[in-house]
Image (cartoon, rainbow, N blue to C red; front, side, top):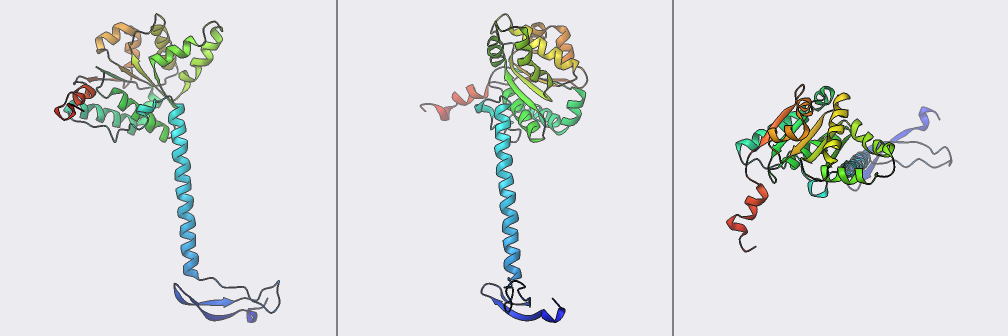
Amino acid sequence: MSRADIMEREFRCDTHGPWMAKIIPNPFKPGSFLPPLCPSCQEIEERMRVEEERQTRGRERQAWLERQIDQAGIERRFQGKTLENYLAESDGQAKALKVARRYLDSLAQRIFGGDCLVFCGGPGTGKSHLIAGIISGAIQAGRTAAYLSVYDLILMARSTYGRGDSTLKELLGPLFEVDLLALDEVGAKVGSEDGMLIATIIDSRYARQKPTLVATNLAPSALEEYIGARLFDRLLEGKGVVVPFDWPSHRRRRALSPAREGA
């Protein structure tokens, strides 16, 4: 096709008005020409295609995150809990939130250093909310993470009884290796074996320099007595931090508020 075969003429789009386009003969159909397309329409279609792909990727990413969070063991009640929707109504709560944010913001360094967090305080004070928020944030950052209550841990361990020690090791193996592990309800009395399992997990992760997040209703001194001075000291090694949650239960305070009477 020679340059002389290509001509220009004005075309009109019902939406965008006139535009100049080259008339190119159709090589597969002599005597006909390739139909020109409005450049403005093409630009809009391309933007719509890009936006549709962005939204599709967003939906796929969200679905992936939800699956990862579910697989991480975060209970449904806490799956929507983030650091952004944690309500800090006191100085203590604001400090706890600041610690959680600082930990998540420096997650790579925390994981590299094996730095642990220990949240100590009564029930209903927001410990599980903040831990779930950190775990969810770690997953969004592309890290492997797991959230496990002591009750779930004991049930999982009991399911292996009578099947040999190798089965229990296979069960606990992933908990030793994930980048970040949260243990909730530490100190809850479930059975004689609970302390041994918790000690095994904390000790094994310490040896691998993997950080563990711990939430407990016990005071720091009671937690130290429960897991032993050696393990408690290992939780504090490096930049490990104990955060006291020494305010009243949010759930109880909300349930007993005047606005809730007669509800």
